[in-house]
Length: 359
Image (cartoon, rainbow, N blue to C red; front, side, top):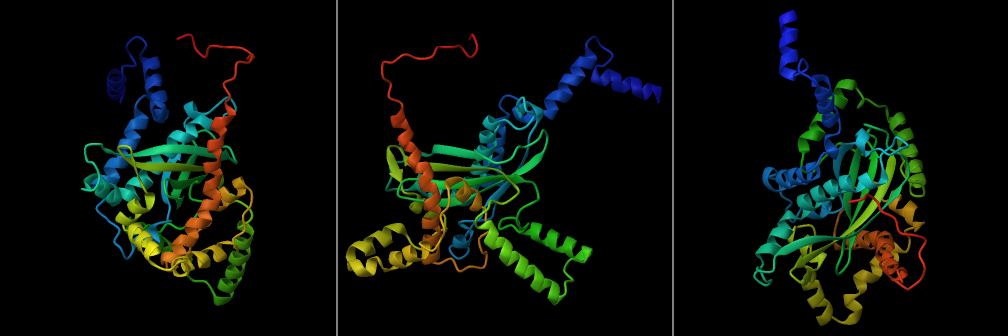
């Protein structure tokens, strides 16, 4: 036993000068591996490899539209080096985790559309395809404690002629939603098996009726109040570029089998058809959207975590209705472009000039 202990000490280098401090430094680095140099790049690379190379599942034209607004969930934790002097996750560190979550969603949903754009003969292949982050904002609701685990739920919120808007919610781990997964069906089977073993499926009809009433009342309440599991909510927007040319997000979505109709064909029919016929669908959508309550920006962003009905028939009208509903939130980010005009750069006195660090 003593010989084994000495062997372990020799391997770890504890018996050498400064060995204990070296071991403590290694343990500290492992506990804060997220904050080490280049680890952020490795996390992004892992998402690209897992979505583009390891994942073999693809959305087809039949199942794609139902997955358009479904979120992707990534799990994270908050090491001590990400915490501020209040001993909770610093606001600046949220954005690196949000980068990882959004990259996984874009690579998961839009890989086919982006491949088509890169290989398109109508675009200049020499100019190069790129997806560019054009803006992000985040609102904070609750603190995340050191080493607390959390999830980021990211999904498509809306899109216009230029921008694709994504909404992300930082929530407490295992407190929101179903375990069912589009690209990981085995997760659902594991959950069903566990549920059967615990006997949770054996509910009386009276109990089911009571739960249905409670769910109905809670969903009505949640339409006005954010989900209690939310730590923070964020909106980001992306633009697709082929050189200087901007590719409409709807084209990428269609090539990814997420939209039922080619946006170019819809535009052609709109110009060839009489004005009344071409706007009939939009009139129906607009009248339906008017019934959706719009609250303050923060409440609306938090409230967009409400689950969408997975059994809903996602035809062109319902997709357009959800897109317009999402734009009522996304336009709050678009309006922030006016902030650039608040920098007047006029020749006026300043309070002072100070160094952050001396180099």
